[in-house]
Image (cartoon, rainbow, N blue to C red; front, side, top):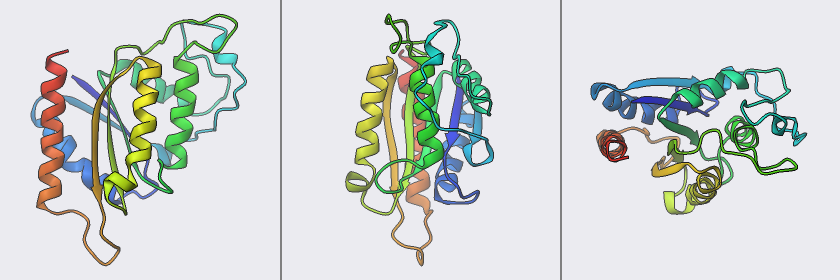
Length: 195
């Protein structure tokens, strides 16, 4: 299985990256190939809703010249897409939002004069997130939005791993969080085997 992780944190060594370490390690221990793309290092422009991507139903087709095509190629070649982002103001970070907006338009050919296909239909998605509130109040809106996003795009939503940081004076990672991250990876592997 090939896994594409879109790392949306602006901090190189932040909480999201720390949570991804045991998650990715467990996937790789089980023989899966993980590619992590750090969005903070990419030139990513926001979607302008020009709909140029709707002209050709066989390609992503965005006219903007930035690093988005590299991300699209990784997404199209993976079995499991994992957007990983800290929660800022109850949603993902701006680079992640830009990528998600560009993907929903360029991959779903629904917005032209006629309705076309979803270029990524059938792929699976799972979320990894960190937040400062309890996950049911901190990450719930992002998960709700992404469930709808997956349904709209014809993707298989497999769930979310969300962990809370209790404060800047408290270490984020501990053994329990690492165990839950590894367990989430195990569950995803089991679910993907049945698809």
